[in-house]
Length: 236
Ligand SMILES: Nc1ccn([C@@H]2O[C@H](COP(=O)(O)OP(=O)(O)OP(=O)(O)O)[C@@H](O)[C@H]2O)c(=O)n1
Ligand SMILES: C[C@](O)(CO)[C@H](O)COP(=O)(O)O
Image 1 (cartoon, rainbow, N blue to C red):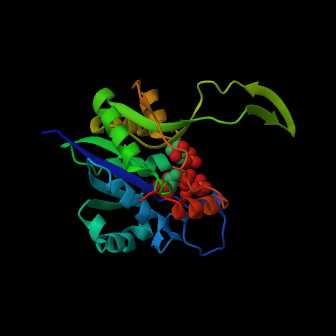
Image 2: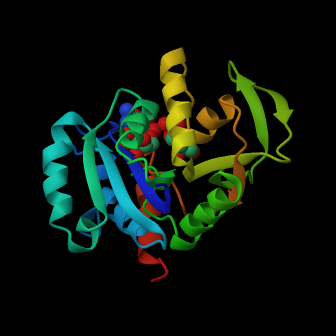
Image 3: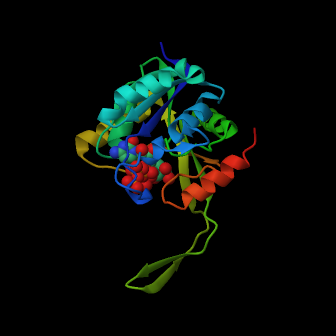
């Protein structure tokens, strides 16, 4: 029987090539912020949202055992942690492997980047409510800058920013809808950069939930400066 429970799949199998750093540095999801790995902060944020009852973490093959041990010793997370599994070569492949570990009786699956530790519980809960109401939903924030194409060192056309949104996570849907869409993508050999892209390509409509600018994705080195400032000023 399908229930209204929500599980979150957390892709954390990336190498963080845009983050740079020295050879041998841990990948950004394992780097520490105030004494704990970014991944742990992200999982705590997800587990703190009402309605999230399960977490599936997707990591590189060599990280599966160490991460399983680390997380099972973290009392607040151990209850919600359902599986730590090996990811794939792309974010979408990692997400597909995680979603495959969500049992049929779980009604809703959310996907949230391991490197977005500042997501607020209220925004996660808003996405869950929107999935309950419409079947699929995702967080996004409106574009605030002027947008313009550019090539070969010159500006080209200005892009009207009216109605443009920067996608964040969590993104999610009824479990079977995302599982089927990911399976179809794999069968047909196409990829999208996020779950909304996968869902839309298979014909699903996705509700827009306005998020918060602080839900940054740690992508480039300067994002650490932002992350430290956001951590220091977080609302408790
Ligand atoms: N094969 C991959 C690639 C990415 N991710 C995860 O997807 C999230 C968003 O990806 P991104 O920020 O692009 O991370 P990386 O792929 O690690 O970064 P980069 O593109 O700079 O290499 C991250 O939590 C990352 O660990 C994943 O699970 N499996
Ligand atoms: C899913 C995502 O976080 C939405 O903004 C983003 O697309 C993932 O990062 P990537 O750089 O596209 O892999």
